[in-house]
Image 1 (cartoon, rainbow, N blue to C red):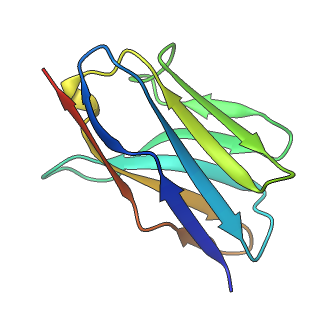
Image 2: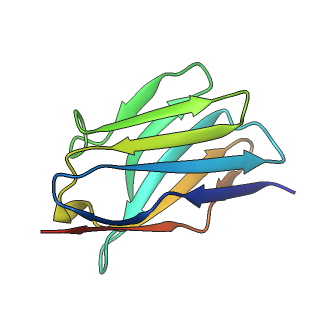
Length: 112
């Protein structure tokens, strides 16, 4: 059974940091990504990483967020620094093989 399980969300003050983790099981994903969805808004791509470590970021998080993956642990991470209230939302892990899989999401709340 293929699963993606996120962890690491929480409440943080503006300027603070959080590290999200997404543990995958059941398959190896060629591409893993983090998405987020703010209240009342569409889900948006935050960052992507391939098995070779090639990364891509949304302009809004470049220079603040770092995506990484440990292929041996089949886990992807999102280090989020200099967090701002606009970063508040539910963060979802996404994995792509021949189809797309989603985690259940983890809440990130940044207070001003």
